[in-house]
Image 1 (tube, rainbow, N blue to C red):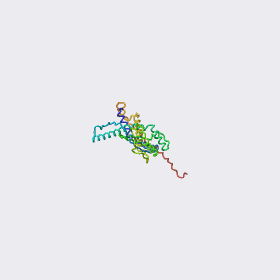
Image 2: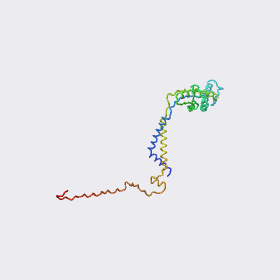
Image 3: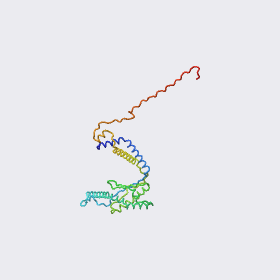
Image 4: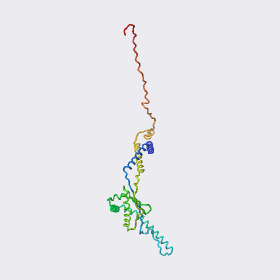
Length: 280
C-alpha cells in the first residue's frame, strides 16, 4: 500500500473516531482544571522599572568641531555637538545594558541583595529564594529595564523589589568606572491581589494533550491492523485481480425451520351400554 493510501486510511480512521477525540479532549480539560486548582499556588508580583544612562560616554558618533566659527553659526554647531554627545551616551548605555543584566544575575550580586534584605527585614531568606523570584526584562530599543519579583507572599515580593531599588543603582555606580548609572523610574507597589492561576491556558493544554493521545492511539491501531476489509485492499496488497466474493450468509437467518407436526389425539374409550336389571 502506498503512502497516499496510508494517509487516507489514517485520516478516515480519525474522522470515524471523532467521538473518541472529543472524549479525550474533555478528559484533558478536566485534568488541567484539577491540576490547576489543587497543585498551583497563588503568587504575588511587584514590579520596579529602571533607566540606564551614561554619564561620560566616548562620543561614538563623533565630535563636531566648533572652532573657527562665531556668532549664531557657532552656537548651532555647539548645540548639535551637545545633541550628538547625549545620543552617543544613550547608545552606550543601551549597548552596555545586557552586560549589567548578566551582572545582576550573578550569585555575588544576589548574595549582596539577600544579605541586605535579611539585615533590613531581620529575616533569614536564602540566595536561591531571592534569585528565583526575580525576572529581568529589557525593553526593546530603549535603555529601560523592568524587574518583576514574584513570590507566594505579597509582602516578600514588595520587600525584595524595594531592596532592588537601592542595590541596583549602587551596583551600577561601582561597575565599569561608574560610566553607566541607573535610576528608578517606577517604584515598587505591593500587589493588591494574587495573579491569575491561568485556568484557560492550562485547560487548553490539557485538551491538546488529550487529543494527541487519542490520535496516537487511533493511528497506531490503524497502522498495526493487518486485516483486509475490502476487495480493493486485497488487490492493492497482493496485486492480483479479485474474481468474485462469497456472500456472508447468516446461518440463523437462512436455515429453514422444521414444520411442527401435532401428535394425533388419543381415541376415546366407549363404554358398553348396560342392560336393564343389571346392577351397575
